[in-house]
Length: 212
Image (cartoon, rainbow, N blue to C red):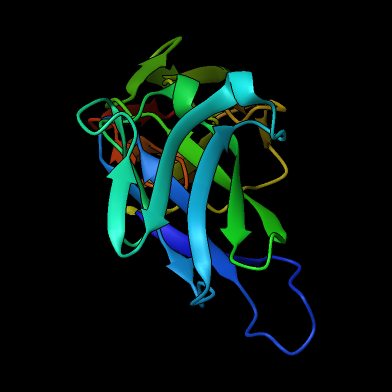
């Protein structure tokens, strides 16, 4: 899980309130931590979405005479006594904007937003080829990387594939075309699929180039 900080607007002469923005892997727990929470906060309310609509409240914390009252203490969303928000076993549906409303003792409020990005576990790609035994300067080959990820990187003999003028990648990088094939193209090909949280590499596929 990776984090960054988003700044909240705050009243002058107060410490700047920040909350962590999260990149998370699907199925993991996510904790949205608050930095520089004002000491005179008497309540915190978390909303799902870019809103403070009462219908979108997902958790709240009220502090009266040092007594903490939490809403929804045992659900998939938990607010801790420090105001941080725990999202348990996130799914793709949990991705998006979260809004925090902080109530202060002087009847003022502070509002800020953060984003949670959720990424799926990358499955091991399947690498297919139109032909694995080809003739030099005569045949072409098309390799296809089947994966649930959007970022794809090609490897030859365990290192990054250096494209030549005879090689073309499709716009989504899922297809590699070599036309015509030459002897230096022989070897073990793999494709590596990734997102910002994880990656997976296919089993190697051997391309055998015969002399004409």
